[in-house]
Image (cartoon, rainbow, N blue to C red; front, side, top):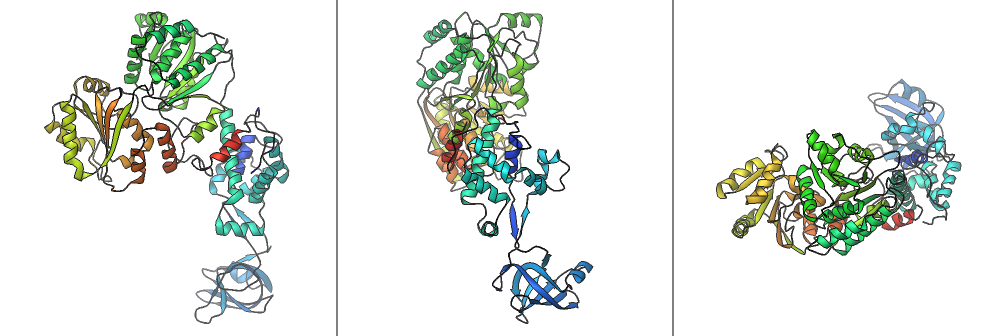
Length: 627
């Protein structure tokens, strides 16, 4: 569909635009069209199976277990028998009128071969259409704020008037698309009949897809912030060069590009919010440290989802940052000594403890969150506002190792500066095998070979405890088998209070790790060469990719075994063919639909009702051009 030359740029979600409600509410109403239509068409051909209405003349009535009314069809004089089950006085009164219109489906009486209509409905206006809205529409906020309307339909049509619909041309919506939207709420008999047989299709469905993409991007645009940077134009290029010179390896082109973009952000006058999205093992930590160097001598705060991840970043900071930058690991507890360390530190690494520790943030120029989707919306907002002062905001960098589909990235890139890390510092050769019970002997041989070579193996169970609903062993049930046959077996799940100590013990001296998906994100196990995932069909592809990413962290050969009872699983087969996280994000989209960038959830369910991100990239491109 064509678009006009105007657009949505500069328009805020809460603007009225003369529509009677905010633009967001207006689009919400458009995205909740009638779920079905009842067209009261007058039938021309009286054939069994035909659905519609007829004008009839009353002949007589027979009361019994059912109510039978004999009538003549006014146009043809043909006898039509009306049959009402569970009838009431209402039926005897209204069906005995001289003439009236009835609506229903025609059929033949199997005994008399007379044309009949079962449980007909009397209507007053033939050739009209009744709109049926979903009950969920009753919960729409703008409707609940307007109590003068008895029904949602009355309210909806009072806002979505033809005049108001035409105002969408100012946003770049074409007249053709507006006509399609108009038809959904002001249908013709022809459209209603077509909808009954085909459902939403063609240009009508396409118009809703475009409006849904527009509403999504409009909401994203409302989340952008424009505020002066606390330390305008500051980027310590000298400290960055010292950091780069200290590295025993060369950064990948994607890492260098991301660092260059961050340097430009810091040199600007406006506080920037940037998302750095990297595949598993793409070297996000080096980009984090480079950013801290650029922000120095001002302070940087980084919030990690777990203390294990915080410790890893802190260790890397000690190893690679220039001596002028002093890292501090803050995991809880406060004292005067800790306060002194906080005051002296340039780079403070912690968990959500950062949000509850008294910090002087006046000198904080940069705020970072690692694995940002692991935090709640309130936590991310609290971190972002933690170092905000009257003089301005800090720059905010969000890091994620969960790639999202390119179509979602395309929509988000308009409003959130985004850097992608696709290159890998180390070449990985991870072989993925789908196996079953018959392959268990060979799997045992492989595990023994890896242990002999001083490598480590992780076995991931779907549940901690036994479940009647699952035909796989749980972690608790499977552990004794491995503990009897191997020496250094570590068992860990989210229920263990000392899980971090267990993980550290395994990293140093363990042979086999039995775990749940706890090790999905961020944990560095350099000697881990093999991961076995039990019941992989129960997990999303993004989670499987994160688990596989724990293997061969420093490059080289690695193995991933997907132990399943399903002999043919196309989704797992597709997963086993690629190591590219961005390709897997698109596969996950194909099989499970999209997640929700808007509220920080990714790969988690079907967020869109009409838009298909795997098929509608051309529509998204058109809508993106309006912003």
